[in-house]
Image 1: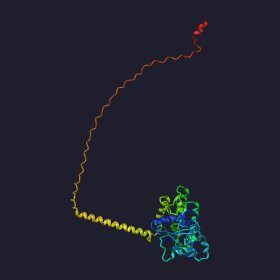
Image 2: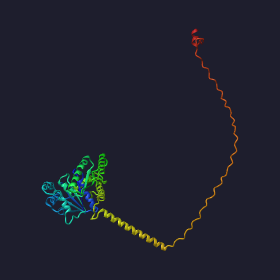
Image 3: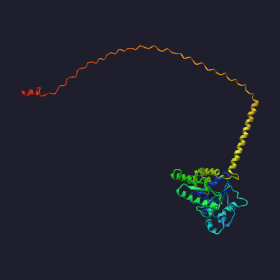
Image 4: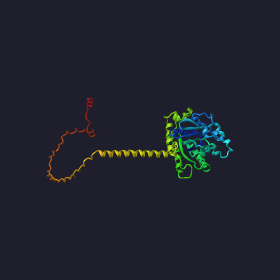
Length: 377
């Protein structure tokens, strides 16, 4: 059984939505899932249509030492069991202040039991704080899953969260490690989202090979896009796969579940994904061998019945034809140049232009006009 704490001290980043819908998607794939609501707001409890405070809850488990299975509610969906919460859980931190080992109460309920819990995976929905309830989840978990909104303030809180995880690993839970980061309410058309993704990728790549809990953490390629159907389904007490199975939210969480199983090696019905894959490959190899042997037997049977055809004699090689002799063509006799008679072109005579009367000068006597004659008379 693998225990994963879904944690982020910043509220409203998609922790409860991820636990509810990812758990449902994994259950549809044959994983026996137990969802633990460790948030006093009881949003995960409401998400599955359970009334908070109607029965035993996580408050009774932590403060009253009540067995976990006695408070669990099953039958809501196939392979899904929910351990509900209530508002009284907020007082558990005060009531357990004098209890020795109060950070490990939940781990004892999950790990120490006879018989062991009948689950393949436990997802813990943590409150948006780093108090005692969150420490209980980290002490009991094998891995941490961090839902992250692609915004600046959420990215700043990631550093503080990793410091807390590192502290718990050193002092309480040495095997604890960060499994991965899931981007929720992602908007691909904004520049800020791309910058946040680049920063997270660069930070995780820089930690490879170091001795930190997030050295092998992965930024999941399957992102959860902003979708109104994911916000509507809790009011109906259903997961996205029961409320709107054809929505983008259902598509995103289905893709995340497939990647989640392959990345974190989640067991399915007591068999790990590696074991299942090896069994499938063995079965495929066996079936391939059977098909091959059948084909060989059929070919052998046909060869026994059919007579072999006579051998085909190879055709004689074709000798290459001798190269054709080149025939020299005698050069053509030189041709005598032809003289072309040129007829001289005679310009047609043209009439000379009439002379232009020169303007009268002082030496030229003025001509008498009719007006002058009349005046003389």
